[in-house]
Image: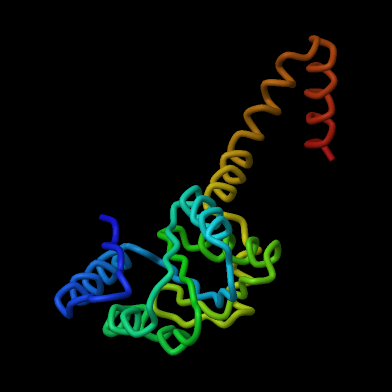
Length: 181
């Protein structure tokens, strides 16, 4: 469910309440929220950041600080609301590492974005924590490594079985000699 666009002029209290409720609901299934200070990012840069975050399974939001503080109040991410001062942007994701990785990588490429804090499932993260988290392999990379470890013995056996008969005999002979010693 997309957030209703916040209009600057003439926004009624009921519309603000709906916006806050939608924002709070959008954070319910997230594991991590990263807060960054954005000093003059162009619309094209924010769009690029949003695309990268969507590819990682997350979302990027530019928020009004007062409304964001209301939305975060009482949630597991409440502790980072103290960082909502000045022009901030948040990234959230269900993947524990995706939001941190996207924001840190983007901040390295663009000096107008500075990661300032995060919250991982209720625990506040400093800038250094977020950067450390971003260096970890993603869940997909970890899954690939696990599959590689599981497949490696089978592929070695297949290579040995495909070798000429003399090589198989040498390998078996070496194992017999090794077991005698």
